[in-house]
Length: 33
Image (spheres, rainbow, N blue to C red):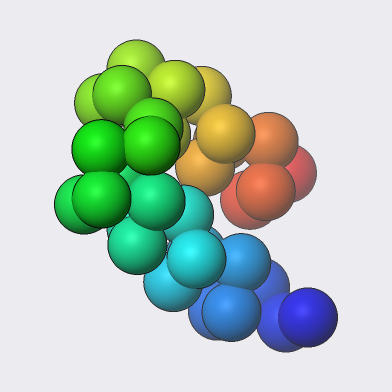
């Protein structure tokens, strides 16, 4: 998976309510590092 694919999947999980805003933000930081 590419970085873009990872970020898209995270956004999909956030929109579906699977991830909270906080979880989304924390996970996004990990993916970007």
